[in-house]
Image (cartoon, rainbow, N blue to C red; front, side):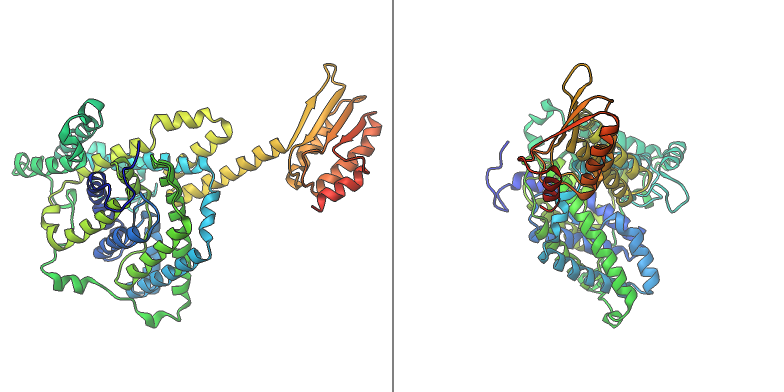
Length: 526
């Protein structure tokens, strides 16, 4: 597997079809997230356009795609209500963009390198499960909830699972037919024998699925009230009568709110949440990238800051790097960031010229595309590989998946990171101190300090020394110790006195013939 050239226009044969797929996925998501945010519908499209074109050009990531994020929808809705106007809120978005630019120049993106790998993979799998669960109702024709919803408990009082039950009880036959045919066609498009056909290299499967859905709905289903899909069951993009109307939809921030503390609190919240979600998504996309390229996180923060600055200035929602669109980009075969930029131009063109035709697309067709993306994210191969890595990797992986499904993306990741950090600390503590028997009669032991020993290792050392049998001998090996915390020193010193009561003889190696107490004190001050 190789990329022929690294130029922006060097991989158009792969990037254009991928950008088209990302556009089809992003269009309903931009509208749905704006609806969930209780913001003007057009603000979601603006954010999608800026995320594609501006951030796409400024970003150092080859495959990441940015736009409005469902994880921020609740924050946006609450902030608009608190601030009293959408124009005051967009001022907060502008300020958040400036803060992100500052974070980028301060090189705060290094935080992204410290997320546990098991949690990042759990995030990918969790989003895959979430996509499948959330798209099942849309595939069955239940389109009451907005596209891109991530929360377990929904605004209508239902939850992820009860929504599926309700959808099964009220199936739309037209949506079911379209989604089943679409999913079957997408699966066929993935088969090796089908990929060898010449036209599959030119025409992306998702485009065929969308066109087929439109044809089915407009010809075979039209006039049949039981099958025909309209209203909430199709894309609902605002139709502009001219470029003049486009100007009227752009809403500029109200700078008179600049001295209001709540605006600054909102800006700080958006900057922190958007930056964390971006860094997490960036790390996840790097793992999905078949070429294993590493995107520069500080440049990404600058790009996101620039995007949010411009989005806020023209009335758009906050922007982050988003894993659903990025995953669709990767799975569609994108090779460079041109696909993300191209999808941004498609969003802009759709508003200006093609809204009437795009509003013919059944949501069931788009649901089938996202169902396949979801399956690829939580593939059995990934789950098996995490299982093979052992308990310390598999548990944080599973906890992250369950937490994302049971709460939402941001809360689930936070829970996963907390569990991941606990397991990392647990593993490090186990590796730092080891106790090994050197005789069959349990009379000789060696306790090794393999690396730095902090106060976190005190309990482990104490328990290992406490359980030594009477009349035994133990050698404490400090050869590999670079640092020993004072708490650990005191624990070992205390044992030297209690060992006499149990008739345990004690030796040290790695002390270079110095007094043990002096050596350990020296190590503690390194």
